[in-house]
Length: 355
Image 1: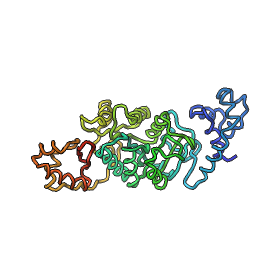
Image 2: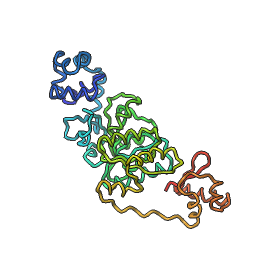
Image 3: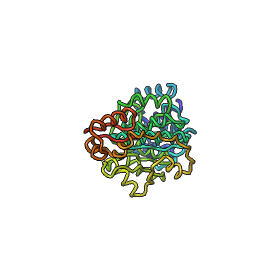
Image 4: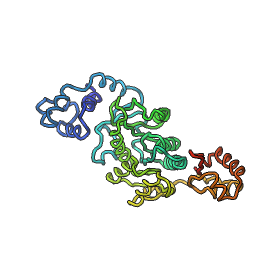
C-alpha cells in the first residue's frame, strides 16, 4: 500500500471528518496503522459505526479514481505528514489532515494575503480587487481567494498577473469547477498558480462546504482584505475566521449608499484597518511597498465630467445638472471614457468611475 493510498483509505470514509481523522492519527500514529487496526481498537477511538466503515474501506471506484488523479502531472495529495503542508494551516484550530492540490505547491511557502468580497461586484470593486492583488503580488504575496465570481475572480487575475501568483481554495472536488463561468480561470490557476481543496473528488458545491473553505482561505494568509461585502456576505465569515485565527483584517470603504459597502463599514467599525492603497496593508504587515506606477491623468476635456461624477454611480441627467454640460456632450464624453476603461456603464443607465 502506498502512502497516498493509506491516506485516501481514511480520507474517503464517509462521515470521517477532519477532527476525527486527526484523533485517529494521534491514537495510531499514521494512516497505515489506523487502516490496519482491529475493529476493537478502532471502536475505542472513533466508535462502532466509524470503526465498521474504516474496516470496510472507502468506495473502491472513488479510491481508484483518486489514485489515478494524484498520478497526473501537477496533481498531488498534501497531508499533515508532508514538509510542503502549509505552516500557517498548522496554526489554526482545525487544519485539514489532507488536501488535494493542482498546480504549483511552492506557492504555499510564500507569504499570502487573502482578498475576498461580493460575487455581485461593482465595476469599481472588481477594479480595486484586481489592482490591490496585482500590486501585492508584485511585492511577493501569493493572493488567496475562493474562485467565486466578482471580487474573487478579479483578485485571482490580479495575483496571476504579478510576481507572487495566486491560490484558489475551492468548496468542491478539484474535478469540478464551480462556478462553471470560471472554468478558464481555474485552468489558468492550475497551469500558473494553485488550486486547493480539502474535499474529495466528485464533491458537489454544497452550501455547507463554503464556510469550511473560508477558514482555509484565512488560515493560509497573514491577513484578509475585504473589498466589497453586503451585511450577509460570506466574506464576513472569512473575516471572522481571520480574527479567530489571529490574522489581520483589512477593508476598503465605499459609498454610504451602497449595500456592498455595508459589510466593509461594519468591519471597520469593529476594528478592521481601513485601507485606501496596497501600501496601507504593507505598512501594517511591516513590508515595504514598491513604488507604484503613476496614474495617468485625465484630459482637461473630461475632467469636468469626472469631477461631477465623483465615485458613486450616477445617471446622465444628474451628471448634466452637476456639470452644466448638454446631454449630447456628456454622452459623447461618457462613451470615450467607457472605451478607455475609465468608467463603466451600470444597469439602469447609470455610470461609475472604475479608475
